[in-house]
Image 1 (cartoon, helix red, strand yellow):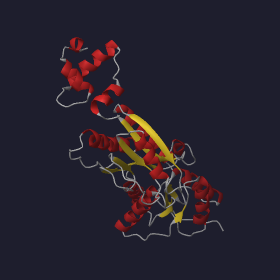
Image 2 (cartoon, one colour; image 1 turned 45 degrees about the vertical axis):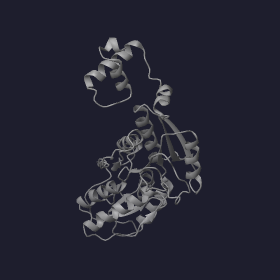
Image 3 (cartoon, helix red, strand yellow; image 1 turned 120 degrees about the horizontal axis):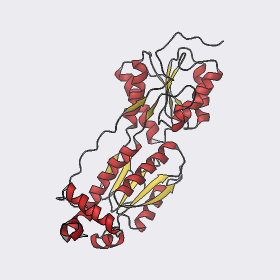
Image 4 (spheres, one colour; image 1 turned 90 degrees about the vertical axis):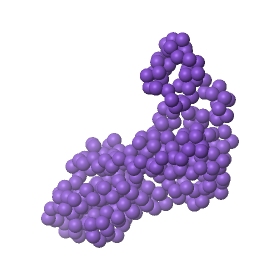
Length: 331
């Protein structure tokens, strides 16, 4: 391979160990030569040489919810692209020992680092970890050799969603929140409230849902009975879909009577009636950013880590939002 690429054996080794001081042109030549020869990197051999397993463990809640599932897909892509192997252990909401048990299981498998993609506050876990740990979208829940945090920016995204409605001219914005045991729901509530405070607007009472369309529907029935509501920020697209259904049944039009913004940009959001204005979560960007920090902590434990980059903010404006109009409530 070295002869085909026109480099030394040492340079080949540097390329496959992702070392510095190798130009992109030389790296490309080595990888092209590897492809022509049908060479595949032997991760087991590299693990023996480096003393690392090149395995990342992930603790995630066992749910088919769009947000946690999409973030897990982003993590899987980032881990695979970096040449690591992934180990996943799921927890059950409401099990206070779930995180500790999942972490112990991953440590028994010899992982080099752990990602906690656990969105629910189960309190402090009784576990101590001797590998770096990345907490995605949540505060640290136990001590570790090195603790890292990164997130999808729910607070900033909720702020932007609320500000979008205020910029359209609405006097204030109501909020249908997610369950407050979830860190993301708290962040979205905080972002909504911060935007109202920044614009000197009063914060109406909050209605709490459970992420389901049924809870959004129930919230919509409540809002339909309140005079003067012109704009609502709903903390999840699935709830927003149920919410709009309830408004429609009550004889209210979206966005003519009430503008609605969701959160997540689920694939179905573009096809409901009306198409839903929503906030797109940067799952892939957050996963890549967090995993880069984690792998740097694993491979170069003495190096100072760069600060996390703020995730991008993207509001997908569709047909469920508009400037306020005169209200006409059904009797």
